[in-house]
Amino acid sequence: MASFSKSSTTVLVFFLTIFSSLHHFSVSSFEFQVGGSQGWVVPPANDSKIYNDWASENRFLVGDSIRFKYKKDSVMEVNDTEYKRCNSSHPNLFSNTGNTVYKLDQPGPFYFISGVSGHCEKGQRMIVKVMSHEEDSPSGGGGKSSGSHVAVSSLGVSALVFVQFVLSFVASRVI
Ligand SMILES: *[C@@H]1O[C@H](CO)[C@@H](O)[C@H](O)[C@H]1NC(C)=O
Ligand SMILES: *[C@@H]1O[C@H](CO)[C@@H](O)[C@H](O)[C@H]1NC(C)=O
Ligand SMILES: *[C@@H]1O[C@H](CO)[C@@H](O)[C@H](O)[C@H]1NC(C)=O
Image 1 (cartoon, rainbow, N blue to C red):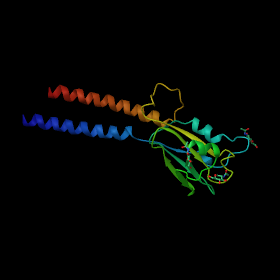
Image 2 (cartoon, protein in one colour):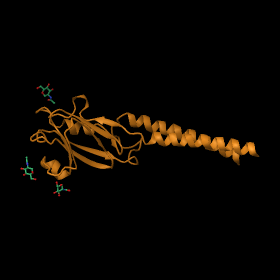
Image 3 (tube, rainbow, N blue to C red):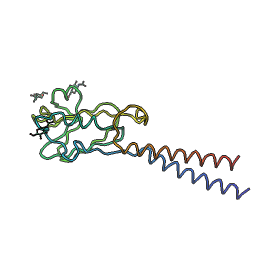
Image 4 (tube, rainbow, N blue to C red):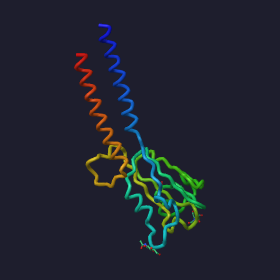
């Protein structure tokens, strides 16, 4: 009897270890660099929508971060009215460090503009639409994927299958 309960404890510990690492995988997030390698700059005059084009090509999930890299510029997170006006006296975020990481901590739209006078009007502004993990079904949507989320979710699925296997193994031993 004693040896039986010892082995089931071992299996339980094993299962808990798997489960906590599964949790670790499922909350992993991704960091995007705004505008790719050129960073956060005033767009060329003939291509003023580069940031919204960039944002619509990516899929942002709650918990992801975006990094702004820039020189002699700044970034502000504002509301939609201020975004349209290219002007904010009370931004939710103001940063001019040259390297700003913003964590997308809730679903919905986020509005970013340059804080340098005239830059936002030339197109240095961006709307980022953030999805909750529930909205991010692997089959639906048709949205373009960042790649890394796909890898994470398929890893999650195979880990789930594995946990299911371990569970049925435990059940067959204990019952
Ligand atoms: C914008 O103009 C540059 C040259 O001035 C050109 O290389 C580039 O292809 C143009 N971009 C678009 C979107 O027209
Ligand atoms: C921005 O708004 C302030 C008032 O909130 C105004 O005084 C200022 O002139 C505006 N700047 C621009 C560039 O529109
Ligand atoms: C946006 O923020 C400004 C303050 O900077 C505020 O006056 C305005 O009501 C806000 N607009 C919305 C739609 O929340």
